Length: 462
Figure 1 (cartoon, rainbow, N blue to C red):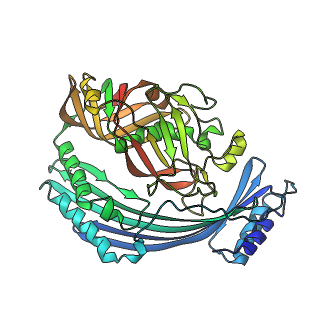
Figure 2 (figure 1 turned 90 degrees about the vertical axis):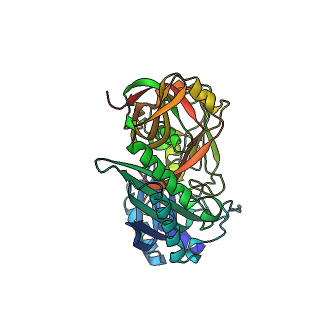
Figure 3 (figure 1 turned 120 degrees about the vertical axis):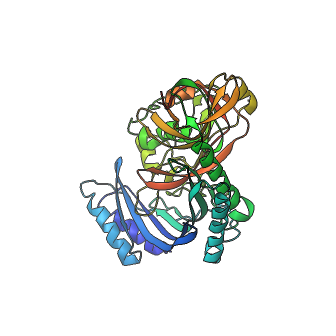
């Protein structure tokens, strides 16, 4: 993608006006997508993203420029633009001799998506569509999409790093609308992995995913409105982990912490969660949706314990924010593409398994809400205040799951919720999502076992 000689020229040009550190991120990515709607393939899209970003550190700040002209002359122009922005800063920095780290690729791909015909990908969507519609005559709409991506990156910097990585992703999404003629309910399932087309041979059953979404939509169509109030809430595994991801995870990223904009600033070593809570961000899980071999600064990925037995142990840190904080990077720098400068982001973030049995978690809760599936939501990282929709919920009465309810939302503050978790189950499961932040949208896993919060505000109908 880029010779070491050319890379050295570009980095020297970026530092010519006095920057202290320079970095090149070059990517070449091929994307494919198919969308089925109204029982037919509506969209087939193929695209290529190719370009490079050049970053120069200026004290505790940075200048970032990017281009899709990745020949030597194009990169030199881009580097000189970055250098022109730092002329007021003076340093004697130069580049070190390149070294190429030797490491194993832990994400083995058996069948590259580019080697699979579009008709086979379309057949996955047709299978899913038929399975969803077979659930009930009340299924009014099914939208199924297939996406794959093959990304090659090269990262080099003035400290001498010269490394490459390949990332391959495949994902299915099923959105199902159930209708009574008077009102509608929508449910989704979106499984994926850092895998090739073998995803559908070993990990994901398209028909089962579509049926699950359709059954949820039908159940919620005929459910009563959820009552509002403060009550115990049990949140099931899988996508239930979005609560921790949004309400707490973003507040543990250096993107917020380095600027004092997190409720967890300065709390390393302090108890911030109940003793039954251990939370991890792990980029080393083979073939998982949020994994990588290296982050987007070239730092090897790792398993990072964020919270251990309720005690805050680590933040997620990229190189520049680590410099601001006086702390080492944790392999957490990520970006959507070369058009974005990297910042600290989550990877596969989950609450670790605990010791409680699922049936006991529910049977001992009295009256409350069981959130079987979570939907989307929003959070303010500075305060930890969040609001999340419950995609599929049930009232619990006297420790028994009773009737389904719809329209529920969970409202609270991350720091408060962490301290109110009083049960953690044994069966941890992950689910896939796309996370947006300053460096764009990146694939992340959320996960947890079943957990119980002793008291949380549930929004519904009064």
